[in-house]
Image (cartoon, rainbow over all chains, first blue to last red; front, side, top):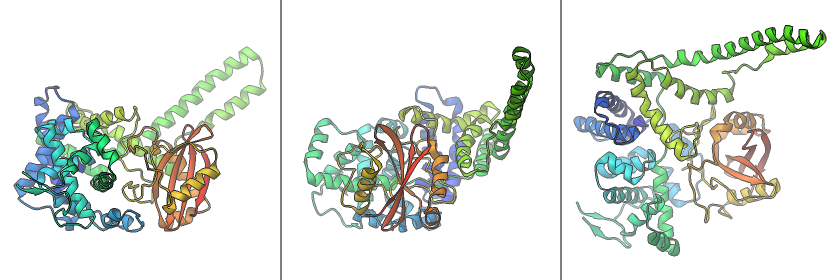
Length: 164
Length: 320
């Protein structure tokens, strides 16, 4: 799962591998500091997520979806005929590309929720933010993803609202 | 940062996660416009939940070893391939133990019953005790779960165990949530049939995890045909949950694989499709696992196995 998180945060295989390595090293080195107050998995997610982000920031490199190894997955997608118009477009959109289009704070929250399956309280603990902020970040991330996979990249024309 | 953002999306997103307040839930379910937005955000959530291709076992070994080195900790991680090979000797050991037990039992039986004929047949049947065949497709699937276990237990030092325990702890945490299953959660461990692409629920996911009861196979076929043609949506009003303990295709993976290959459309399936969706359905009081396989834009096949025994029940050709 740590690799999966790093993979989606990084957006490409090579960076994800390096980030996973850094995450595992951080976990091993940080074992002494695990005090048992949180679940081990939550603590490990926290260390791993931060390590992945740190590694990518060090590289100061945007995710490169062109290096993805999801071609097989996309080929499978193309072999089906989705009924939902949103799915029709999503079948043509690469997950890494779509996630790369999100601000980092939204992307990480969405990944921890949808890919890792953490609940809001756990994500709040992992990211050291308030649960309300988690809720907001996930919603904003999904909202933008929905725009991407439905082919609507323009600002929302209906019921839109400007929020800080 | 200024962000144009539909104000209801936050409520809808938390509704999808089961984190909305009762008032928010009531408001969403009463408003068709919000319901449409629910579908779109649900598609987004499924999209971002698409599984990542897992790393090769050797790569994982290298990553763990390098992490232990970097942490200045000793390590002696057993190679996964080596650990995998140990499965067979264990099975052989069990078979040998069975032979020894029978060999010891036969004289005793002779002494007790004074019968000479029955003991020979007992001895002859003992070596035929089943030995796992790691080469069969079904066993190959089972071996994946076994590998995870070995990957954890094979780490012979405290440090290695700690480094690998995180995946075990996470799997255990989630397993608790899905009712104590021995398998990793479906979200993170895509069901894979050898030779087929991974099951991706975001691609074709027409079935609820748990379907309503049907009286017989004919009704099930009829229902699936309606769903397949888009004339009816079984998902309406059904709370979908990928972590439902009722759906555990991995448990019946071997049976499903054999069934897929043995079916009359096996060749077509091998050439063109993967398992599209799973569901459990109660048919005449018996809980069955249904694997829906889409083999063309206009045709699907449903494979039905008994969820309790994993024994094949039937195969239904679905043509809307």
